[in-house]
Length: 442
Image 1 (tube, rainbow, N blue to C red):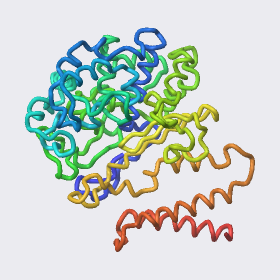
Image 2: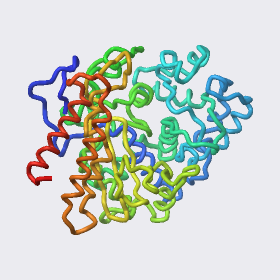
Image 3: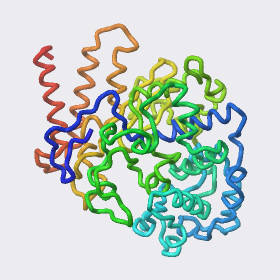
């Protein structure tokens, strides 16, 4: 569950992962917290997709907006900004068409200013703190209220964590419960799920129940620093910075941990809206949430990532049906739900919990990204071979293996040394191909 010391050296006898190991789901949280909660609330007529955000969170959602449009990439009047935000609906945010910036670091705006916000004034006013507290979570909601939009709602698609942070707040407001309590009472307990939780270390789990996610906290081996930054190996604490520092570990965009078995059981609910004696969603609500909803594309729905016309084969492989839905997470996680073939596939890794290649050149260039395991789509691709037909699949497997060898060779940087993970990845696949040739004479 953690194979490395903080300096990147291998641990001699690491604790192995097993079927009960809980993984940081990262953005898979969006589907199995916010989407599940909203699908249930819509089925119960407690909310409507047409509801404005302000109708639940109050007029401050738009009235508190500040005049920093230029810093956010657009030049419109403050009155226009307020009108845009007042019009935002639940559906707009589910579609990622609301206009919010993709990743504002409310806990660290000044340090990250070149990528998001350019003025010191904006930093001073929108900074919400980084102390992992309920007070900071409340301050983050206030900062979101103040945040101007980057574009006019419903005119483009821009994936934003803020969309699901807002929807998480909305669900808590409507239900009167925090997300952990609402999901536990309405989904986890009825389904008898024992290995799924927000903030596992505060809910009866130990570090060794969870896979680690980064060797040196959120510092990228010391490259990143801000008040309160975690420097220890993250294990059992959500990796996502906004979820941990800004949202006290419980957010609509990230924070859930789960084992593969429990997550697969939870995902199965998407087939019919129920499981055993329990009904959670109406069939028509599932259809609405999973229908194509992207601007000019068929590969996105209300939050769900659709296969469409082979548009997400890097997630789901080339054999998945067009109505296949799911999502993936930054930590190396994937869920695939194929209703036509009655398949649920859950694939969980902690690929980022590996050394960095050159932290100063690229603070996100983890060794694990070069491993076969990080190529999420190869798992459903391999699984699907032979699934839909009763025939000898040897040639198909050989063809796939040959393609994987060729593709991995292309990823080797020029003039690289043999210790580079891309080179070692290529060599490992090549050795499997050589063994295949010796065994079958092909």
